[in-house]
Each structure stands twice: as structure tokens, then as C-alpha cells.
Image (cartoon, rainbow, N blue to C red):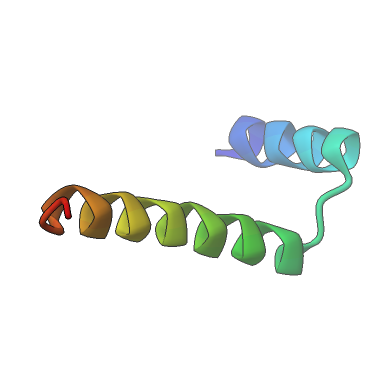
Length: 45
């Protein structure tokens, strides 16, 4: 467990990501997935 936490700390320090950035990226991916789903399900005019 400590190794995982240490790896996470090292990874976080390397990337320098803020929690807000992580949430934004997750929302962005979710929006892309939803948009792709809607576009594929929508009837092509």
C-alpha cells in the first residue's frame, strides 16, 4: 500500500496535476463519450 502511495506521489509530482484538472479531464472524456454515443445513435440525415 505504501509503495502504491509513494508511486502516486511521484507520479503526481512529475505531472503536476491539480485535482481540478483531473476532474476536468474526466468530464471532458465523459462529454466525448456521450457525444459519440449520441452521434452514433442519431439518425443520419
